[in-house]
Amino acid sequence: MIEIPLPDDSVAEAYVARPAGDGPHPGVLFFTDAIGLRPWIATMCQRMADWGYVVLAPHVFHRDGRVDDLAPKVDLTKPGERDAFFREAMPRVRALTADLAEQDIRVWLGALRDLDGVADGPLGTVGYCMGARLAVRAANLDPGVAAVGAFHGGGLVTDEEDSPHRGLDNARAEFVFGHADNDRSMPPEAIATLGDTLQEAGLTGSNEVYEGAAHGYSMADTSMYDEAAAERHYLELEALFARRL
Image 1: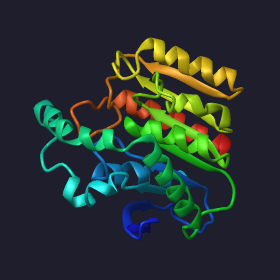
Image 2: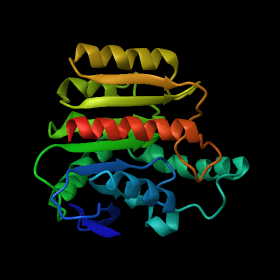
Image 3: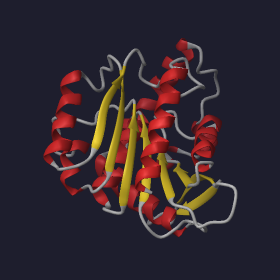
Image 4: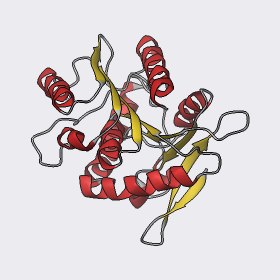
């Protein structure tokens, strides 16, 4: 764990995972789901780091408290416990507006580039659930982001002017979207609009639904985990990073 200085003189915690061996290595910015930083996120980050990347996962809810204060204290593999935790977490998610998120994303990208052992050159991002929105916004803000993985994301296409998909004209990345099946936060019409927007922006990307996989399928510390879908997402993400980073 490290601390990242913020413009208001506060700090945000972040987790860093590194590959074995000498660098430099390409950098990857990892955006968590609504549950936030916790041991399972560290496991995911290290799996990606072992592919040959320095991975930075910031505490995006730094305005609401420290990691240990906000981390779940219950077993989220029990459906009732997961639902109860999300009732507590969603006000934090809603409070992270597009303006605040983009302000932070610039800090996270700078912090990633400044880490020891991060190579000059293109960066990757990956995000889950609400973090998928942040990963897309990172590419919209910074043309140095060359690869974006976004999995079981919600709210990627909305009617709001600051919807993540509306900024894709500014992106230069390749995108891999792995949507959850029958996900109310990304219904079929939103997925279709996202695909159309990628094509209109001249961007390369895949925009697929993981059949039978529920929202949250990659998170093994919750009741939504789907091993087959999770392993598929790792394969597609590793291939994306290998192509672009």
